[in-house]
Image: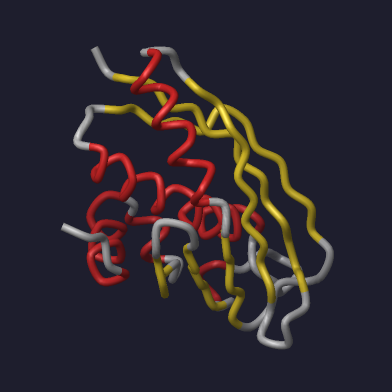
Length: 151
C-alpha cells in the first residue's frame, strides 16, 4: 500500500496532533521527494508576527520522515527510525505559505539496504528547504536520521 498525502495527513491528525493543528500538511510524496507546506497564521506565529521556528521544524522533519516511513514499510522489515541530530538556518521572515521540499529519498534506500544486509545501524543526513510563495528560501533544516533493525 503506497503512502499518499491524504493518508499521511490523517496520520498527523491522530499521531502528531500539534503538527496537524498548526496546519502542517503533506502535499506530494514519492520515494525520492516529499513536499510539505504550512501557512503562517495566529496559531503558529511567534511574537514577531512570523512563523515560529518549531512549526517550520515540524514541517521540515515531516518532509524527510514521511519518505522514511514509506520506504521502511516497503522493505517489509521491522526497522526503527530516529532523528539523532539536527540543525537549521533561517534567512528570511517566514510569513504566508511556506513549502518544505526534501529530495534526498535516495539516501534512505541506501541506508535501509545496508542496515538489512549488515544488521548494523546506519546514520545519514537529509536536507529540507523551506521557501515562501515567491520562491525565496526562508529556512533550511538538516536532520541526521538513524535506522536499525528491531530485535
